[in-house]
Image 1 (spheres, rainbow, N blue to C red):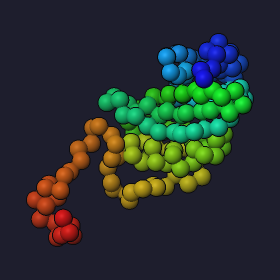
Image 2: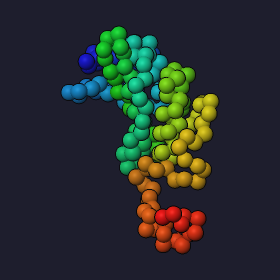
Image 3: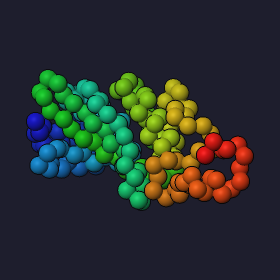
Image 4: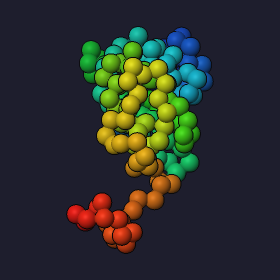
Length: 159
């Protein structure tokens, strides 16, 4: 069910997210938030009953990374999508203290898109090792098996 846009807007304004914009589509309510207001917006939505984070992930738009937070209110059977634009190589502020379930998805999104993570208790890589390029960023060229073979690198003889 779609939440009431006026109620969500009121909660955001009351919680200090003055520049957040609310848009309703046929299937979802989307809140766009500035980086400076992400914690205030998420806290306001949590206080308004959206107290469960379903997921957190990134989308490369070709110009920046949209970090998407999917929040749910089980009490009202409503969902809200929060989008935050983060520039390439910029820092994402962790929200794990508000939503403990964000701890791993934050690390994964930052690692896959090359973002830095601030305020996290363990901001280490989760899936790859140091030196691996951001795998999901559109601006990074991923080498295929043929390119690896052509290098003559004996350490990848299994290809």
